[in-house]
Image (cartoon, rainbow, N blue to C red; front, side, top):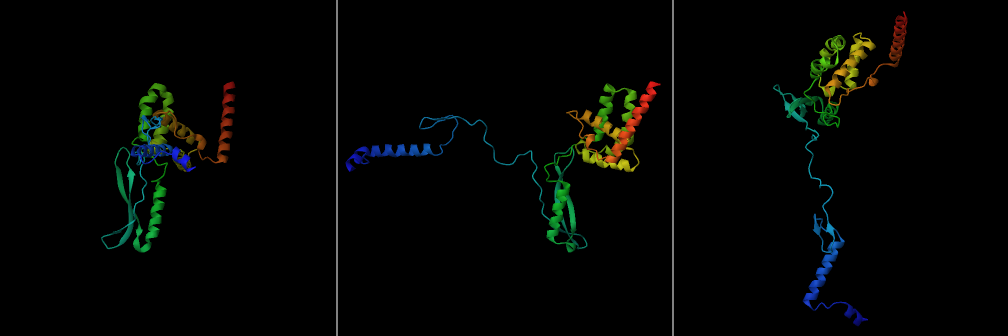
Length: 263
């Protein structure tokens, strides 16, 4: 048995045979584990490694994403010696690439602890949506730009003078005074509902409000690239009772129109 085993195994006395045996074992181990992946490289056992179908992901943060803000609460001192908690944060300015740094005073040091000041800081950042995924950098274009485009470009091409007088009255009377300085990105269903209830408290009827909002939709859709309004009237927060009353008024007006047309 020992003689057969000795015949099957190569002798290690020969240095050349020993070197070849170690080299063979090294190649076998390296190929059986994780061989280094090199593009367009032929491994020792004959396999060819092709380049990956997609580039390797680079380390680091994307430049398109803003870093979340978590400023430190600091202690300031006024001229009279009174100490207070404050923190500083960054905001985006419409039309400017650089951000502006602002200071928010949390409260007096004698009226709260640092833990309470930290909690109020977090509440402020949450309410201001500084770290929210829905936060959008405000644009330099406002509702005034959309109105100018509607008057100068769309109306002369698409509308008659008599037809344009109605939306132009809506703009001058109800929209320009309230919405001219508002960025276009900030006009959504929530801000529209807030504006709608203010007009309702001033005595404006629901029918008038809907007509004015249709004009706002036309102005914004004409100014946007996809030609779509940023909100739908189906999301208006009108009470069900008022909606039913509006339907009754529309039906009565339709019946009155039919009777006049038959005369």
